[in-house]
Image (cartoon, rainbow, N blue to C red):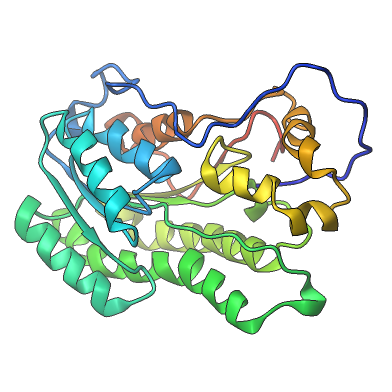
Length: 295
């Protein structure tokens, strides 16, 4: 989630409204070629109750992957579990706090008892807060770092030894273009996402010889509730000197493709990285941002 400094030009009359519901298809966007090996695998998706995490869960379910869904919002999680089960795969869902080792250990124990060993981990849980450095709350800093950076460490620790023993695994971390280019008023968020890319690269080197790949996906502005909340937040708009009513259009037009990324697009990239076709891709941080950044 990156905002670009730019003059506020007059906006066209056409309005593009960000929906709060992902554009999710009834089946995977991939053909089965190159994805056959995923059928019967077990994937754990954190932050799976909405947005990108939800889209990833349904994309993988459509490829025959058994799904372990984790989130702190159990009500929303149950709805996603029903959607995933409609693909005819086994589904386990349970509330899980990625900043709490006991919660993680309990989740993994129950998930693997229900589904079998976890082969794929997608770290999608993440939070954003707007805070100028001069007034940054230490508690908010810690909350963001613990969720966005420490969380992936703890979840990875819980499953990576099993992947090493079985000599197969896929680890995908959802970072951000703000993990490559700094964003004003988001020092904690940027620090966590830059750090997640470093974590991805280091871990990829550790486990490469065991048939495990580790990659980061770096979305730009995605059509999710989280992005919409940021773009229309009164304090964030004020700090960026952007009229609140025009913020969504201004940022849509800052993207070269002049559109927001759909969660399903991110999910399709994640599924590819989990496939046999992507077995040589590891340690990479891949942008999916409509050209918003180019490195």
